[in-house]
Length: 88
Image 1 (cartoon, rainbow, N blue to C red):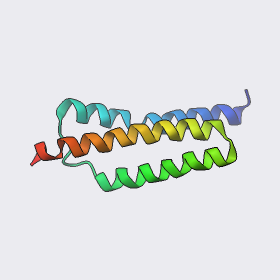
Image 2 (image 1 turned 180 degrees about the vertical axis):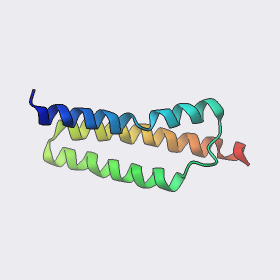
Image 3 (image 1 turned 180 degrees about the horizontal axis):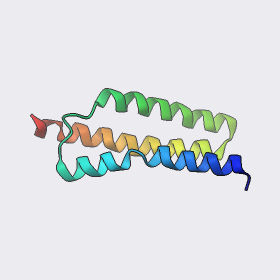
């Protein structure tokens, strides 16, 4: 495997998993008042478009990392919507 591929997979893994600490914290504390739903909505739209782009280009790493990111960030948005009433 070339260094460019290693860097790409490392970057994809880290950026995809970056939301996990927020998901875990929000799930445990049931507090989401300070988390921006607009930011997550824009992020979900962006990674969704990246996923479509990956299919157009037939680029498996783009499809995989952005598809997983779409699901994780979507989960965070659902958690925010679910626990938002509890924060008030």
